[in-house]
Image (cartoon, rainbow, N blue to C red):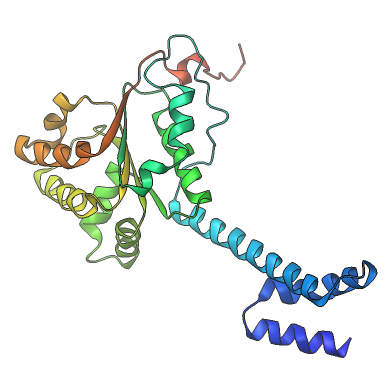
Length: 251
């Protein structure tokens, strides 16, 4: 028992926390099953790797700032009147080959069709695969960009976004932005261009972007970079929220 304590202590010193916690159990099981020392070492290393992967995933998931967590499996592609993207499309996108090449994805269309749901589902796949993801609405992005010089918290968030492998920019076009904000948005998009993938959701067609951005030249420059390497899906159909409306007294 004293030897186990000494070895466990050394494992902790090497920051092999999962291995140190499991040492006694693994050694006892190995003795009963007549396992070799190499088997014990392999088991401890696998436990350490699994533990670190789980912690890393949890850390990436927290840092992503998803508004909710819901995977792609529960998305209903077959609901009546829904068009613009298929289950086969999403299955291919979930393989994340586009992320390796810094391609962008745009989900366009009216509210209530699942644009945010799909972007979160793909974001979760990226987190599981080891990528760093940042989810943020355009309104929130503008707020932190404007306050990053005076707010350490906003500065940390901006830094995390710039260092992400995938940035999910949600609700683009819901609220108008000032020319100063438009310049900041251009600067960020230009910084991420060809280096970081962006998933963008918007209820506006490209022809309407200059209306909420307020400057046709900046709009053209932003769209030019976003759409250069990009898969665009224009969704249509009835609102999922209205079709599944919940009331106080039930149906």
